[in-house]
Image (cartoon, rainbow, N blue to C red; front, side, top):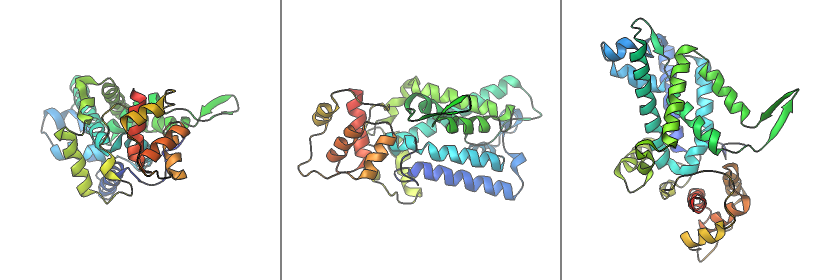
Length: 299
């Protein structure tokens, strides 16, 4: 199991978020101001500090948290490659805002004005991503160490547990809020999945915003917003070829897909033969091929 090709190919939104998180963490670390971050009762219900609220979304409070957090964010770029930067931007916004709202409610219930109850960092996004990771990413290998059984997904879970317990209660609270946010997104609460439709203005604005402030992507960004169906990984039904032909007529001049593109789709959980057929129809565009496979699977 891996996140596909190395680097940030077809993952410009993930790249931006990781760079922003690293810069803010280093900035506050150099100034020795980690203690000023995090949410407390006074920050929300006393003197509202908007800057602190925004910075706490991106900046981690220690170097170990930064290392584990960026590692998980980097791995979860696989979801941006699966659903496209447009839809992934909506997932980021929903996860952060929902988990932040849940954190505010928790702080209001605890009513402790003397302590920072929530550690800073993008815990909402990271732990919301564990929901699709658990349900949608298949296990490809299993192995045994002494009397313990592990899979290729175990290392991601171990990194998540380490991050969840890094600041004990202060990190457990935002982590659990992130898991709840990811669950609400998966359950399509408030019909949030409709916001992934590229015809809606909100996701288009988000996508345009990220495309302007990030470096040019190595992939094909124009194709990332062409699908509007829910994704799931795994093998496709027995009739994917006929379904894909019905939804996407074959190109007149076929392009032989590259092995790297095939391996990228296989790493997402798709069948190898189906991945090759989709790439032929998409002229070796991984994003378009992913959308073809997802639409075929949804039927």
